Length: 409
Image (cartoon, rainbow, N blue to C red; front, side, top):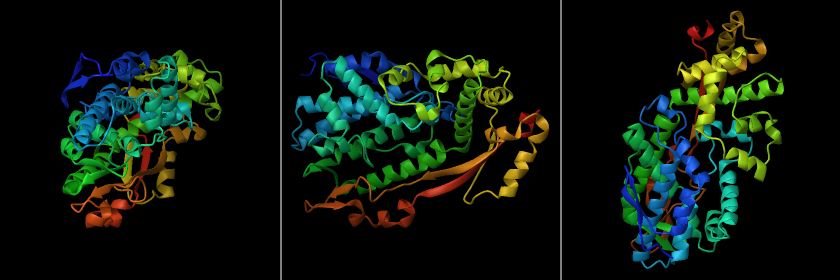
């Protein structure tokens, strides 16, 4: 049942956000959700975009607000959504990111191994469901796509979902990169449901084009910005080195939950109540506080890398369309020989890899258009723009990170 008293939060993107369900207020007040106030939404992107200090907390609230707007739009179009479903839809999107680790994607693989943040989010939702005596049953069913009304899940996970709709607009706002400033109100107004399938009215095609192109540009310009990548790669290697130091019984100062994960072999980390309890104690502060002490550690690799990251004196990074010549990579190794770095540790300072981006995935989570003749067709059938191979192909670029001369002194 909706709360007679509406609680409002003032958001810089949407203005006042009204919360009408008491259960949602209880979930937001829970310590596990409050932890999202201490998890950076864009990882280390603030090293490039100084304003990008926003957190997962406000992103989750914003996505929930968009779900509330969608529900109102669909109800006006005679899509039956009862209050229990409306509450569950908002809870599902509210909790979709609760499983993120410190600095979001930047640390998750290094800490939790093969466990995805989506798996952690679902595990946390189930734990919260026990606390709230089964009140999240329907939200979990929608989140896992096991509820009969499939369009509800498509609003959470899809090529045009409310998660992406909020983070593009929010990340654009805080970073100042205007390429991501989409017209989400227009897209939401064009949503409809046909045969339990989320669809968009035909006149929304150009707004959808803008949405997908905005995502493409935000990835290349913001999320995959070379300086952000350099910082995140360096953080990953610091965590790898910490795990090595723990295995060698080196003296390392770190928070208790960080020790819990880094003292284990990464392949031994399993999804369990104990590991989740420890994971939910971690936030950005564990990493930042650690870096302040690790930069003075006796381990030369750990100290150099930590000093570079905390002072934003990052590894050089080059990005190009073709793989880097092996002789060129070896020349970067040669520079390390005279500076006390063991050959086995070169990989912490010189490394290469691939980054990728895909604008449109025609074979996955199809985008459907409701034509003026009330027919449901795929986006490609009504807009030739999306038949382009360039849009659907996975675009790859190669990167190489290596130290600057001053790092070797």
